[in-house]
Image 1 (cartoon, rainbow, N blue to C red):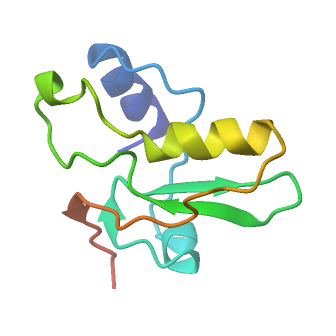
Image 2 (image 1 turned 180 degrees about the horizontal axis):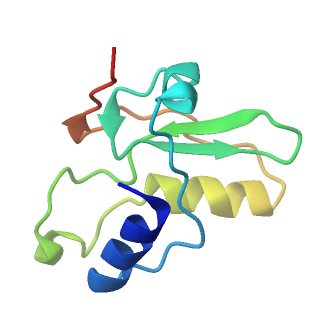
Length: 102
């Protein structure tokens, strides 16, 4: 998918990310050993990986399941922005497997 196609898709899905990283050769994915999508990574301003894993504790696509989730990503970002250590720095990611080109 091209950058323009990705932007059009995000608009169609009413998604609001602040940025999308296109990695068609899988260079960054391999660097972080990404195995699922989505898989979240939080990197601090010094370049240190401070969180890796799932978005939250509910591996579901059902919107009604969102109520009451433990949002690991939000927790990690809140802690980092407050200057606190990340209480849960790793969680097991869930989702579809990443398919890398040979």
